[in-house]
Picture (cartoon, rainbow over the protein chains, first blue to last red):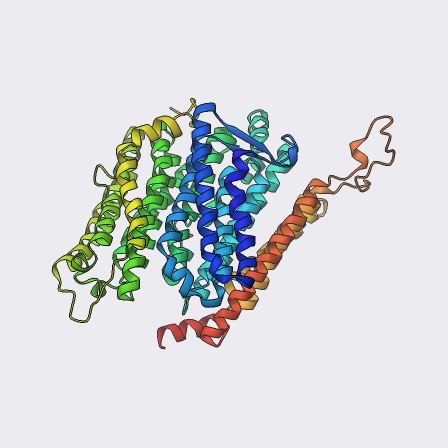
Length: 484
Length: 129
């Protein structure tokens, strides 16, 4: 069978089998998820190696050739994204074994099924080469995501409902824009559309369609000022759902916009004012995200606001309009996903021992949970942008790209947000290092939680050191030569 | 004014979908009751479906089943409506039903936790538990 489908099929089958197993043998549910995610990750590695050696892989759904049928198109960048998605989902799933099995009681099977489904949806978004199929997969990923985020107690359902309302409007706006593109070109296939749009006359409705599509995707990726749903959704929900979705959802939406910008929508079709607006919003997101992160008491909420700032990094980078900045934005998708994963996994382990994630509850953590804190420090240093961690390299590309194009305000934003991150994380380090843990604290570090976390943290160093290789092999070939 | 009126009457389907869309968006923003918000969301999504259905239709055309199945002669595309947007909307209807289902399930959970569906009352309860 074809490698492309093999990456997604285990997840779909796994989610059906998980529900079946939930009825008959509930002990099988968790292992089924491990097998599905591990198979998917394995096939993603195989796919990535295949794409690196033989070039872009295409899969025709049902054998219908484009532009009539739906195609999955995997180039080096999307293969990297697929591996990132399945790999980070696998690490989250392994690290939160206890929560998944105990935390949801009889609903574990449904939770595992939804989790596999949302991962499959995210991978489909990356793989598809069809605009309408993209909408459907965005909704598949998002709907199962809303359900996962609603699992928590207290305010989680309300936060998730909020996210659902905002997210559905964003996706609907995207659908509306696709409708206009369909009127103008008569096709939904991305490659075909790109060809037709090159020759199509540039009209107001073309500009309108592109603007509505991008606007809808900005809402989905929580770009300031449409970020309102994100902190609530990721800070109120169960730590499993937050750690699974925080590294994926916004990053995959950024991927979609980059894909459209470099592969589908020609420069002339983008309204003239749009890049400036995007730069403005991106810069505003960095400042506002950093400021609001500084004011948070709950540490998970604080990281959620840092995510808002990170979205600003990537949106700014892709609209600066030169090769270096675009490389930076693409590299930052990987970097941001990895460091968010590390931080959320570490916070999840800490929250299990200490309860509510306020600064006062983090006293003496370096003594009681040294490995978890070491990983947390690596994730935090990467967020700040300390070499040789991954976050430094993507930020370096973004900064040099901004310098090339004279986007000084954006540069100031990048530097200010790094400084704010220094303050935010050193506040935690200070409390966790110097303060006494207190008499009643009995923290346990179990290897089954530390190992996935350590893998994520070590990957930050490995990927950082090999970021030149990632740019050469995965990213450079994707950016069109016309972008200088 | 004259120009505007002719525009309005000649493209009334597009105006209708825009009005519906704004009604839905208004309900989502202005209404305090969570169920009313969801009704607004449904109206919003339905407006976009109607837009798609509108772009597929043609005056004087029929359903796209070829009358002469031996395909003799030329098929005149003016005689048949474009089925693709309609098929796409079948999928979109499924998506919007699923969205509504998930949303109502979440509303149930919200009611379990807060014992009300009015947003201002919920926020009040969160502030002063």
